[in-house]
Length: 513
Image (cartoon, rainbow, N blue to C red; front, side, top):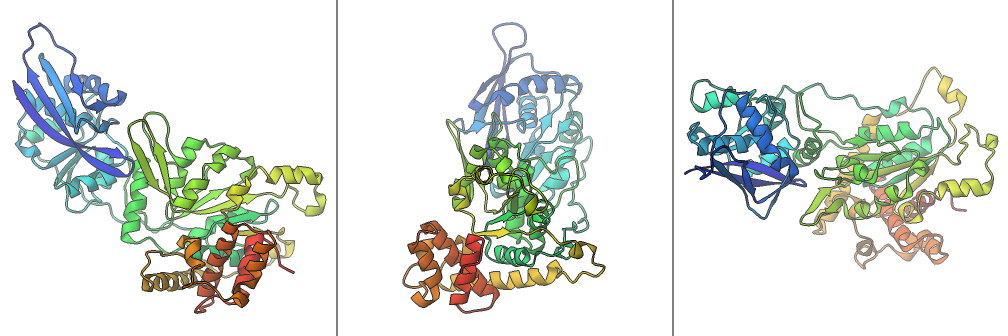
């Protein structure tokens, strides 16, 4: 009886778990080959791997053992999903049957799908998987050529990328050498739309800066052509670049979605921007699905911007699925025997036309008042209550469009002010012994505590709105958070009455008289 084992990685959300693939090959009392018996908790894709392995070996001039083969995926209590274990399964069976030597696999992790022709094919999540492997002490990664560039991003690992199973077998015998993959040369910095391209809308530009400085959610309401999409697309240009830790975190999520397959890969250093279509399903937005559970657009926008255009056109249940993740900063997906979490700290930007007919000029609207109300009420009040600020955008005048010279402020100086305000907020909360980085992350009770409560004269505008029931308790807390952000941008030590009033007007979407 022969026995062997190798290592692969199973992803549960963003967490990689080292899986030991064990194989035992022995002569059976009955004649002929038998199906591979698998134990553990393999899903249907893993169970079908024996078909891929048999064909891959046959097309690589290798013979599948004409014996009984038992395979175990351990820990046996861990659900093993996807096709990433194909290569480990094939190599383990061959080593157990003494077809190939296994000494060169010490400290190695195998991560690739097998094609029927024996080729190594890409799998999603290579970056976070190999980071988990490195943390577990594994030093060599064997992946598909399509994943080589992504795998090379992991420091401290030797990455080998044979093109097929036959080449890997030749390497195991020492008949050929594999050149370790190296990180791809950094590509040119991607061009991000700049605020200088935006005409008019001074109020909206100021609101965008405040939202960026504090990480606040926005609601843009205006006619077609007012610049809602242009504003949202330019929000990443004034956000700070991602730190090393954040870049790895964001890139790992995009890796799990398979966005680096077949091309060069490098860490995402800028805030991501996701703009899903209104026909998107709930699973595509927040994550999930049958079989393989992957991150949705919400998680892919982590540390960046999620833009929901034409918000009233979305299914209400789909939009409402954002409510809990916006509060917690993460997506939780529960299955029968596993709970999956994806980080989802996003800046949400909702956009909508004021009515169904959506004329370019307000006086051209033919919608009755009840139709306008019904249209906007498709966005539920609980979701709207989680939006920090609202901006009503007027139509852009023709003079602004036709002007030869534009004095619009570009993104660079705005980004510097945003960075300065964020640094001030982070320093304040760190000095207080708190882990919050942005004002939007501060819990309302903390801002209402004795330590941070504003004097009555300062908070009077917000207090009156609350007492008159024009805002909810959550709305009151959001105004306080906005006020602290405005104060940081204005370089005030703490919010003034003017800051609170400005925050209240941004929350309501109109001037308080």
